[in-house]
Each structure stands twice: as C-alpha cells, then as structure tokens.
Length: 255
Image (cartoon, rainbow, N blue to C red; front, side):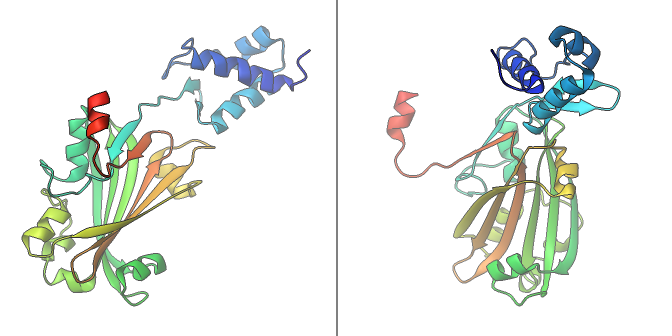
C-alpha cells in the first residue's frame, strides 16, 4: 500500500511521465479537472502535486494557460576559454560562444556610474563607495533569459579607456579593447557559488519557484593590479559551466 500523501503520488506519476517523454519539454499537462478525474483526487490535491513540480523546476504555471513542462535546453559554457584572447573571437566572448554553439544571442545593455558595492570594492582594491563604471548586460539565448552580467571598472581606468563609459556595447569586447590600449588582463580569479534568487533576479531571469541561480564572480588582473570585477548570474536550470585544465589529449582521443 502506498503510504505517500496523495498529492505526492500525483507529483511522482507526472514526474515519471515527464522523464519518459510522455510530456516532452514545452508541452502542456492535462487540466486540473482532468487530473482530478484520473487520480480520483480533489482539485486542491492535484494542485498541490503540480505545485511540487513547480518548486522542483520541472513545470511552470501561467495564468489562464495551465501548466507547461519546462524546457531545459542547457547551454554549456567553457569558462576557461571565456574572454581568453588566445582563442579567436568574432565580437565579445558571449556572442562568440553562443553563436558557435548554434544558438542565437541577444542582450540589453546599460552603463552607469555608481559607488562600488562592498564586495566589489574589496576585489578591485579601491576605497568603499568609490566611483566605478558599471556595465550591465541582460543576456538571452534563443530569446530565453540566460544570465545577467554586472562588470565594475575602477574610476582610474576610465582615463585610459574612455569607451567604458559609452552607453552602448563595445563590439570587440571590453577585454580585447583594454588589451589594445595596453591594459592586458594577464590573469583572473574565479569564485562560484549558488543560492536562491532575489525577487529582481527571478524577474529578470524568469525562474520559477525552487530554481537556484549560479553566481560566477571573476576578478581580472593586469600585471600590476585588479582592473575589473564581473558578477554573472545564471539560471541554475539552463546552464552548465566547465573548465579545461592541463593536457586533455586523452579526453579528445576517447571522444
């Protein structure tokens, strides 16, 4: 005898059908009324089961449209090559990587001057609340929200690189732009964490309840000092990050 609560039985049955392809990504589940009949359960019980799937990121609900199986077209980002000038790029690293994967990139963009948040000031080694140039991108892959990217540059760098303050994207990418001016990023330090999204992050990335975000903080260095701090916030359900370190010839042969 199944001792699980009825709403969990409903969720488990639907989860199995999502996993085996009965309800593929993007498809709509039967209505609450239809599921109530199928499982011989009240609509409140069925709704509780569906909401459990929503919190697990498997299903999304829309007002008036019912429940839809979430699409999980995961984008794989090679973080060791991202912004690496030894690899060929056509424009910035984001557009290059997304296009190379056969996907379509798009983004909105803004630039503003603002005091450095504490975590940024620490990484840029500048005084707290000192002025930084914030370049903020809201990025999409195939029209689906993919990430936000907030890059802070210290005020001293603006005199050398005035285009950092221009209200538009830098076509060749800021890392290459700075390198062309003699401010070359020779190394970076990465920090990767996960947490649940803030309300603003959930709105921008259109993530449902129960879906975490991945935070990738990269501090870039010239041979003298930090030159930028970038915080990229990814949807946790649609992204995979990997690095290439050392001799991987055996992996290439095996593949």
